[in-house]
Image (cartoon, helix red, strand yellow):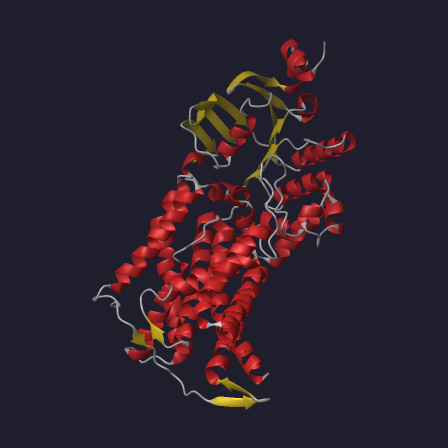
Length: 235
Length: 296
């Protein structure tokens, strides 16, 4: 479904990505794990078109994404839920969700998608009229994912969904991620919480200083000695 | 006392024109953080387009306003595409955009001063409708004032509806808050920016025609002072805040008229800039602006 080959991205003199290749297949959860500064967010931003790579290929079902603008990429159903939730704090929860389905004009369709999101995150329904800026961290993450779901994504790019959340909320968010995937949406998941990410993912890639160091099935990586030592904190 | 209320009316008239100009300042600032110093010159163009529509094309007053608004929209979008968009795409520092805007302003003033364009001379503005004055509780209200108030009100209501109730307005608010995330929603950010320039220009164009019929003399540099004062009004209200710009404009309009009426007309320009200095020193975010936090 998503096919990335030999991707290079520079920020001025800094080489952020140095030949990343990865694949996300239909209905898969793929985790991309790695430390701060390894290039995880850069990878996602390049997929969604916010950053243009210096070289490499990104294809989504035979469509060359590098030539497209971010809004065209969104139209294909590749939905990026950014790091730090990035709510439009000046807008209400409803308006944020409405923007998630920006291309949709039919009222009934919007209603349908809203009720789908409320089924997953009932809390958002209670907060509908509130400015997004007044939500708690957990609610903001729900809003960010809910806003992504409003677009009916084919491929969901999630950037650090567990960041800054309490353990209970982390559990909740990850079970939602699993549910979304079971309904047929492919997910590329970025996480520092590698243990959690590997527990839901089918496959995973380990990114270090802009290069893929390891890849494999999630359960294999969980048992890999290096991954255990560096990312899972097991001695 | 009557004199006082009469001046209040005059202040309201001037404030209305400033409001229409300062909305463009504040919207464009809101969307790309640019203080568009060429905005006063769009107002000037609007006055001239209305002038030619009435004198040469024999348009009636309302079609002349629409004509002027449409032409200003087109020109401002072209200016944005030629002058600002290439810079924005290169992510230059904001100061570069500001200097470019000043350049655009000088260009418009001097280019339109050419004999083959508008010419450097003052032109008397036509009065396309009869001026009737009404006596109302001892005050004299002219048909010009009523038309200025009504048109301003209608335009403000349309703008408010557009921004608060339509999808385009929602997209504008999203873009002004966070461009990258707006992209991720699938919003065509460049188109929304163009649209903001177009909206600002439409209001400035209407303001130009209204200004022309209120103070019937136009020339290529006429946009400088009203433009700067509308800018002061936008800063006073809190730049980027729509309602602030409107209120700020009425305050500036009133203060200016009252200064001219009760102090001395030589101070009428100075007072607006004195307000700017006081605002910047004491409350730089303006009356309604929020202090901008550091964005990470």
